[in-house]
Length: 277
Image (cartoon, rainbow, N blue to C red; front, side):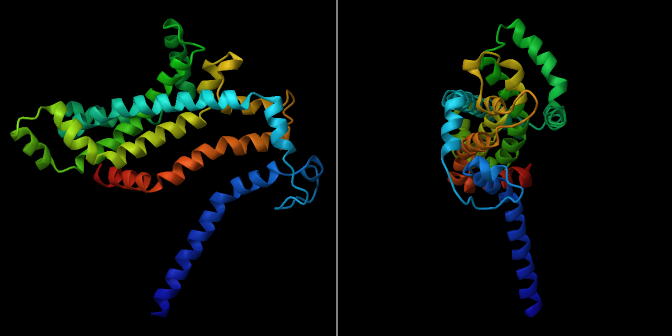
């Protein structure tokens, strides 16, 4: 009994240490956002600001168009998540229910495509979008984010579809329902946790992405929030630390809010996709 309690205490200690490790960057960022310039320049930094101030937040909004860039990021991320889910759901259904050689090859390609680095893709993507006249267009960036999110979305939803009993679909087919009706009325409602997890993955990926947005969007009024955050760093690499920290806190809050609201669905979707995939 004592040994079991000791093991459990060790597990809780390891869990708390891991949570502290994950929370440290955000807590330090939050502390920095409220520190005045004198404390930021101190050689002896403190966890809690001695003289907290909101001046960094006011300066961040005065120097950069944070609200406009946040709206750009929100619209692009929502569009990418919605399109990725709408495309991945029927595609995952086909891969899960029709286990042919072509389906297995497609599944293998989905996994392999995740290993491609951003730098390898940016040149062909840029040339393609230029031919379509979608460079410096939010629609072009949405297309890129959808393509980038689809492999993981397919892998996740394919495993989740396989967890749905095929007998339910067979019963609906006996009653005269077609494939599309079965997918919409029978399978899709059971995929709700997986669809939610997929949508959140696509949203957070698009919200935080920087490289493609930097290359493809040039007009200041169309830039996303991660790109605008780099404007707080001067030409010589010197950052305006207080306003940068304040703006970064504001940029982090939407992702944290989404995860806090649907964390159970995320965990359920990921576990089902991983175990049954």
